[in-house]
Amino acid sequence: MRVLIIDDEELIGRCLGRVALSRGHITKIEKEGLAGLKTWKKFQPHLIFLDILMPELDGPSVLKQVGKKNNEKVVMMSAHRAFSDAMSIPGVDLFVTKPFKDIELVFTQAEQLFFPSEQVERGL
Image 1 (cartoon, helix red, strand yellow):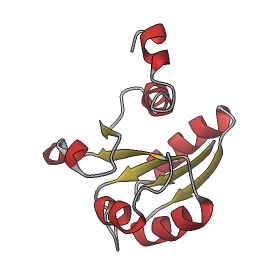
Image 2 (cartoon, one colour):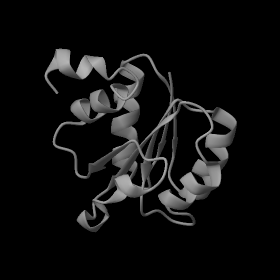
Image 3 (cartoon, helix red, strand yellow):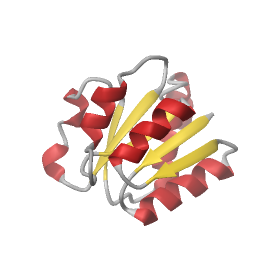
């Protein structure tokens, strides 16, 4: 699977990237919205981790400009609890609050967007 991580917090990008690579995914990381938008269009990812607040272009604006074209899944992320209604943004499949307590679990939940029946089997 192709995974794109767009987040201005370098540590989050690196950690999510390491988890993705350890699970055999092809991964790209961008640190700001405009670069993320360009990479999204070229890379055509299956799974996107997208921060809400970023320099140059925020996450919702990136998502709006790209639009969901295929079966890609978008995980919106924010450290700001005020954005907990991010699921109401068109195209968002999952919202997670940063900081993560368990990054492996966050990634598993994102992968399960593609295979929802596995949630029951793993008890999530």
